Image (cartoon, rainbow, N blue to C red):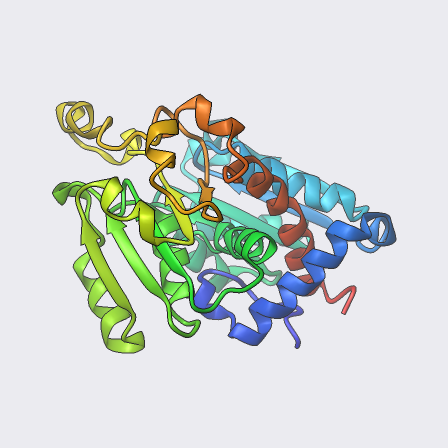
Length: 309
């Protein structure tokens, strides 16, 4: 498997064998962290975050620091030359000379892909609008593999914002590539999975998709529940957000309807869609999920830089 020097804009940039290779190394890094402590010494990660982030930005920084490398970049475009009107192309051309690998988050779909056209170093999409979030997908796959022991033959419920949720779009399209996937799509009518994506999944993978309006319809049947928040920043109308924000709230009572070995995931941040009482349930794995993001990003950085292979 050779990923050195490549960009990661979409999970589709990776074959299933390449994904499995990234996950294998991530598992080993989690078990033997000290063995990799100096593997990227002398390398620099550049972070271009045009949109707010906590987990993605900090987990990338943690990953590079744990590998012995260094980090530079910005977390607010208004503090950079972007505020003066600098283009993405010019910004990435400059950062090329400062960093060995770059992660970019941007509110506009396609911005990281544009950056990759001008970059000489690997560009990683850290999330672009409502489009894709490939490293969150790798994190989610590592979490599922850790707790369920497989990625095939899973029944997965996606609940919340399926229209704008880039984490949902990336993960469902990737899980569909594994055999015998079955999906429950739980959302308000206004936030259903985009029709073009649904048609693509049905046409390309013939996976079964069951649409629900109530979370209780899916809970008794699934191996994985993937909760998402209703994203205020994706709405043009505050009234629409206020009307839909409390559509789904997972609490202890609803958890009693679920299978005893089901796991609850969430890309975070949460607002109120998961009650704090659920945190005490052993099936709630969203905080370990966030931690696993460090190891999968350690693995990805190592592969893109051509070390630990």
